[in-house]
Image 1: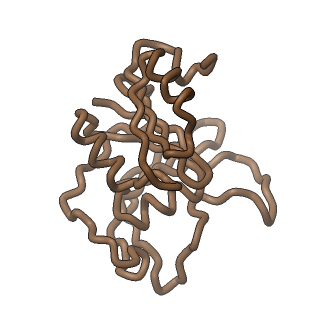
Image 2 (image 1 turned 90 degrees about the vertical axis):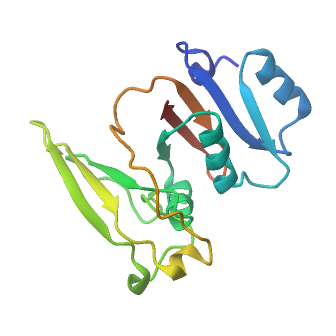
Length: 178
């Protein structure tokens, strides 16, 4: 519990976890003012998590996740926009993480994006903002999509309000504004 995630600033802290988290860990988190939602499953149900966040007043959510989390959220139709940062350097390799890991998609199932904004910086950094245009049927794997998704605004401003974490595959840290 020495984590800045739990202790930094006045933000409300919400954690989604699974039944694999020990009762003593849950009690310790709750004793430190953390709102904990434990799903009785091996992984957090992301659609239920998003529904619960909406119920507690979170209307916009920024996810800084790994490729597996990103892919799952996109596959489930829970993403409105992507903010992609391009650094002026090359690194990585065959095992380097990508923005969308997991099962992946064939080109015929590619998710269409619409470029909304380009932000450039003097040092060569670029921030690209895309809106998801479609999530193909095969990518959804039968999951219904709420076509009235709300637009995510100002993704990269400093987090105020609520911090959320939900372990799923590689785990994520999420930041939400109310």
